[in-house]
Amino acid sequence: MNIVVLVKMVPDTESRLEIIDGKLNESGFKYMVNPYDEFAVEQAVQFKEAVGGKVTIVSLFSSDASIDTDLRKMMAIGADEAVVLRQEGYRGDRPSSNAKTISNAIKEMEADLVIGGVQGIDYYQGATGPMVAHMLGMPHISGVTKLEFSGDTFTARRQVEGGLQVIECTSPVLITCQKDMNKVRFPALKDIMMSKRKPFVNKDVDAAQGNDVQTAECSLPPARGGGMIIEGETAEDKVTKLMEKLKTEAKVL
Image 1 (cartoon, rainbow, N blue to C red):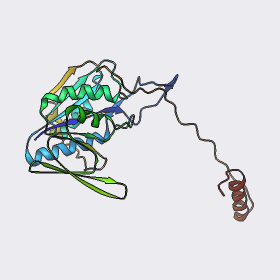
Image 2 (cartoon, rainbow, N blue to C red):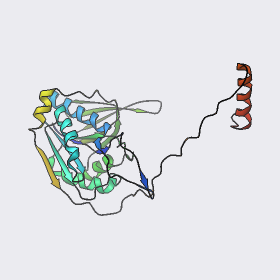
Image 3 (spheres, rainbow, N blue to C red):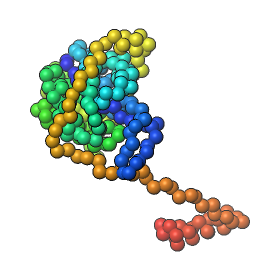
Image 4 (cartoon, rainbow, N blue to C red):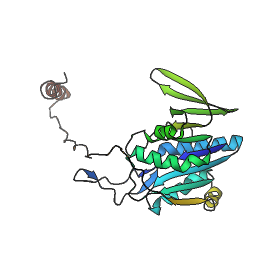
């Protein structure tokens, strides 16, 4: 089975957010693998172990080489190679442009399965995967919580409101994974060392032209107000005063 895994690099959750003139200041950010995409890598490796084949990671990012270590960790899980599309001026909030660039890069890979996370935790758009599927002419199943393969058929399960949906599709297909789809393994030391010898290809690409969404403005949530200490001689006094404030000030009673 020939599997392509779409991996997005997103700001580390410990990075300090700074808004300047309504724009997110990304300078100084540390980046990490999008957590949803880790489940996709693990699922791809499980399929390779079960039926054989090859797992290729494809990631679109800038020329910043600081992401290479985290991508190598994904290769230590069991991916065979990585292709990093290096784009000057890359932004993660342009799903249409990014989908065009990614689909052009993997078009010739003849993938049986393209798999990635359901969304990135940076902009939560959840749009790139479906767009790549459309551009490649592949069927697409989103938000999958369990994926199985038998013969030439994929069986996907996903949670829907009030129940569980089971979908079947033959390859090639594009799948986007929900969290907790599987348990992502911790690679052994020997796998980490071997990952340094695996093919790691950097490929310069231009941004795709055309209409796309743009982030117009960013803002941080308003600061929370301070709490209030309710005084009283007895517990009953405090409860009475609390009930009065909930009724007259908070107006929730």
